[in-house]
Image 1: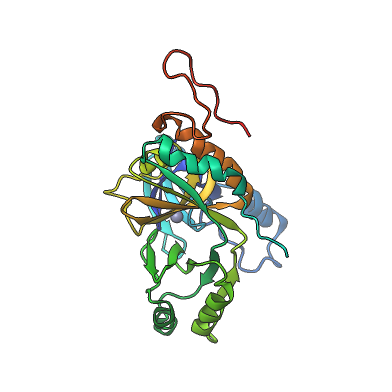
Image 2: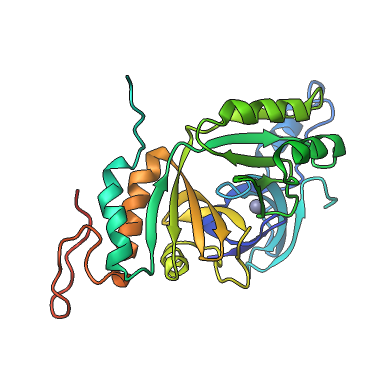
Length: 88
Length: 216
Ligand SMILES: [Zn+2]
């Protein structure tokens, strides 16, 4: 069980949250003009590091806000928790 | 004439039996039909905040998981720009009018969600322990006292918990479709504080394990 720090509510149990995948995946500035390979990369390719990963979570059973954390995929240590509007 | 039925009407006698069987350590009842409005507004807009303050007597809380109360009405923090405004039975249109006036032409919303949830009131010296049986939020008074609220899970059911006084008394806002389940769970969680089962059926103390209290 992870204890996840919601930027609004503080430390809460993992069961209150929903996982949202990697954070900061940038939407192509002009999707009409990108080639298929670039579009496919945007849709399907995600980082899978052994170590710190920025990811999105939603406090779905609590304040229902989306936010970002940086979590070490090896140790589960959460190094940072920050609101959507804060810089990564 | 049509009569209103509270969702937990059928639990009335089992609820009222708790006070005596627990030796006064727990009291349990439903507080039905409260007016509940979901209010979204910009908390930095002083004009909106002042207008609500003048009309209802409280300042919309901006600290996460806190509530403000005045004149029997409360504002519970649900998010950085969202509150649950709770009033008495029949106050839906009054509160709607007040909040619409406060918003004026600014961006926000007022939605009557009174039918969404009913309120189960749990109070008494053992109330905190009963809730702690199934709640991941730390309810210890150093962290969770009067005026605190939290949206969380109680026995896996989504609830808003609001501590309304130092008795302590807790209001559990639960979706009506989960109310029966949560009522059964609470009665079950209370058995260890009750000399006999809340439904009034006596159970031999000691020896055999108690039978399940889950029956209709
Ligand atoms: Zn939260």
